[in-house]
Image 1: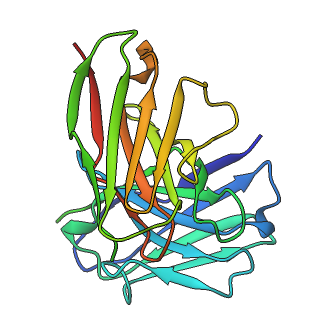
Image 2 (image 1 turned 135 degrees about the vertical axis):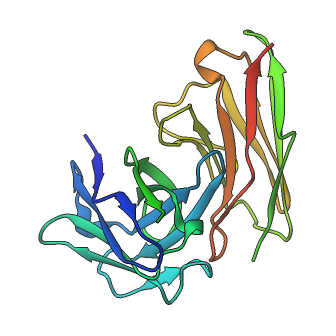
Amino acid sequence: QVQLAESGGGVVQPGRSLRVACAASGFSFSSYGMHWVRQAPGKGLEWVAVISYDGTNKYYADSVRGRFTISRDNSKNTLNLEMNSLGAEDTAVYYCAKEKSAELFIFDYWGQGILVTVSS
Amino acid sequence: DIQMTQSPSSLSASVGDRVTITCRASQSVSNYLNWYRQKPGKAPQLLIYAASDLQSGVPSRFSGSGSGTDFTLTISSLQPGDFATYYCQQSYSSPLTFGGGTKVEIK
């Protein structure tokens, strides 16, 4: 069965960097686009970034463009999110999500989420 | 960016009730509209995609309708596990955007 497991969260000081990862299993990872979606405490869902199945196309939310970088390693079935210049507004649970099918931008499977807290 | 507005933001209902949640887009998204249910402390779960298609494994009491800018999620008979927050999401264009959520609470 499809499984997505995030890792790498924690507490980080403002202005610093953090990398979160998502380990995928149970499906052909290299065939699907992958996304990061976040949720600030007590708030709604915010889409963060997408990477195409082969890593050639990447798109970002305005709120993170230029600070966050999405990447993937299809040989290791791993999705990554490198976050730089973090601010309090980036505090959230970060979910990785799989596309239902190519470029449909529908999230059919989600990880359990990983909490990133930006605080001094 | 396409803004998604859900109403109501919260509602109270009883087990067995019929519940309707609406979602309005700031511009046409055709049928590129999806619905998710999120239980407390859990990841969202896809319920409906392409406005009206039921995701595999989702009970038939969930249904979706609409096109263009106005959409509806209906739960025909509310079950205990349906007390949760529901989100619509447009997949028409980037940036992908979600509605603010509708919290369904026990009356």
